[in-house]
Length: 289
Image (cartoon, rainbow, N blue to C red; front, side):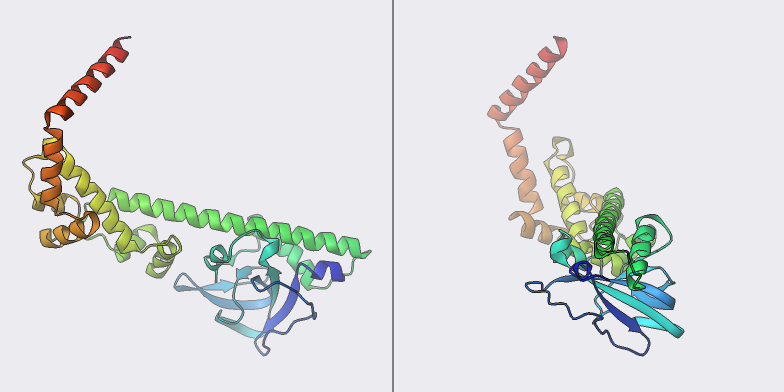
């Protein structure tokens, strides 16, 4: 591979009897953050992802940290080649790439198939007719890896969105838990926690925040003036009224009953009633027009 191409991609072989060794001594001045993409060249390798073991076959890819990733080569002659790519060429943050750690990609479908073909040619050391062709191949591989990273991150965001929609639809279920959520969405509990961790929160914190939001809305409704705090707690998914009162006060600085009384006093004030009547009249007038 020509030197210009290696300024984007450096190769390291990994098999069952070797540590990672660089195939070329490239000075990557100023680069301290890298994306590592493993290409299964021969045989099969088991990799842990989302709490389960995934089998990589020849042509498959895996985003990895070569130092921390636990690989289990299966059989003799198993070989993986690791491509190291400086993050500055990808336009994504290190925190985003941490979300992909250990993520396997099938080399026989979608963008993964295109990336696998390009990287396989580079890993095989194919001789090109002139350095410009090899350099273009490396640039093409780099662009495809970038697209693959963006696609995987988008898929993860979509997965998290669907999980949140499921939680929203089941907030009133007192048995809602990380285990039940993971089971309903057909993922591992470990991966569920990872998704919310990448989003800057935890599963329990997000569920509690949504339940508090629902309960605050229920306590503010004038139609619920006769609804007790305990009843609102149950309708919001809290099993213990005392626990509900405690977390409500921690979140909003007052007890549920104080919030309820404060809201009603504001809604029942003459000024508020006048404003509501005026807005209602304006709406009716605009509708008639």
